[in-house]
Image (tube, rainbow, N blue to C red; front, side, top):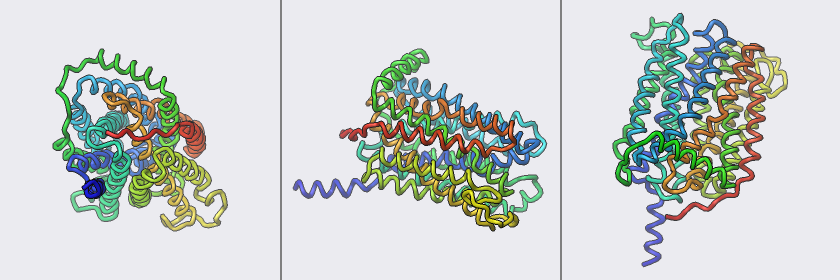
Length: 446
């Protein structure tokens, strides 16, 4: 009988409950926004078309991303603590999802010639709301699954989010190359459609979890003062834990590097190779496909090598890929002149070398982010998971605004975002050292 039970347990371990399956879709609700708006389509459009010059646009974009990071650094831990004190996470998740939906959809009105400030405000609000969606969804993980399934579910969620990112980029590629009749005469319709498509993805992928998610315990009154008091206690408690301290430091510093690489990779590609919306969509599809592969592979590797080693492998790949991007431009491939001039998009060795570097970065990001979320779920004390995921979001943004701000200043001074990639490599190496100092915990067994 015991053998039969053990066999049944192993069989069930591979199945997802309805609630688990819905949770794995939550990351797919925000990834299309990151792909379409902050990375591959709208960001180059803002810097290269809406702004008066590439350098001016890159500078403003860097400041906008920095402002989002600073706002998240302030809001995420406070809202996480308040949510914990009130016991209910669903209302918070629903509220920030609605804000993200409307702010993203409003980017359709970012036509050439409009004032940049309303556009930047919409990007600012949407960026904050999408990040908070991720925070509250992450905090649900211990309610959804047993600890032994955290790594697997985290990897699946990341992989599905990348597939969602690929789907929206395929839509963007189709619209850019063969626009439907009702969009044909609208200036830059493909670029402007990035926001509304991201808004649709929010509805499609967050709704199942909001319908199926169950919360334990009765709702209690929510107090800002109580939430702030909880935050103070959480900060003190986390800093006193050696493992948590090194983990949060590593998360914070490596997030700086990732913020630069993902915030400015497509902007750098557009400036170096002259890529437009369709070529950038191809770039995004390839990168996101490798991100999906990395997510699913990371979920499998987590069970073999553990979350800490998965993070270290991920950061190492990120640093290597970023260094390769730094050494590749319109004339060089990994620092070596090719003698091939850029002409037809995606026709030169240096352009495809840039693609390969991006693919390495994508796999590294999948490994590190999947591993970090699983490790945080194991390290966070029961009953304070939302508060600790607030800290997780906080340290991911606490100094992540520094990188984009620095790149913005560099772009304003030098007219190029390329030197900022060197700063990213430095941040990633420092983050690697901090994570290396963490002693891997064993997952709690419920």
